[in-house]
Image (cartoon, rainbow, N blue to C red; front, side):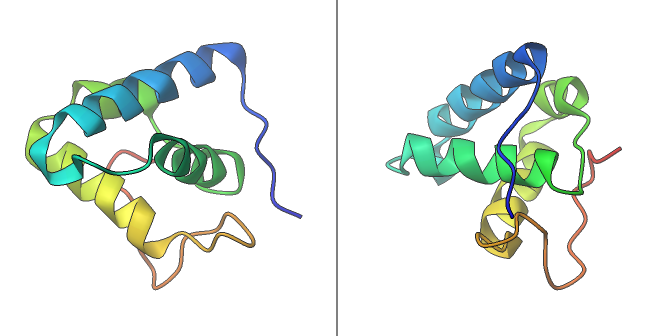
Length: 90
């Protein structure tokens, strides 16, 4: 069963990640809730992210991790597929 439980601190950082992503041209127009759920699912189901470091990453590495999570998240399990591992994972 997929989990969506993260700490209050992590939820705040994830919110900042989503805001940053939506401000970038490559993520413009994407659904905010879907993006947030993908990041939370990844973080809470086996691939913990270094959220603060990801937030501070340059645009290229930030975009790599966020787009990779979106592309490779299995929305039924919260696990990443195809051996994708975000650069800013723990």
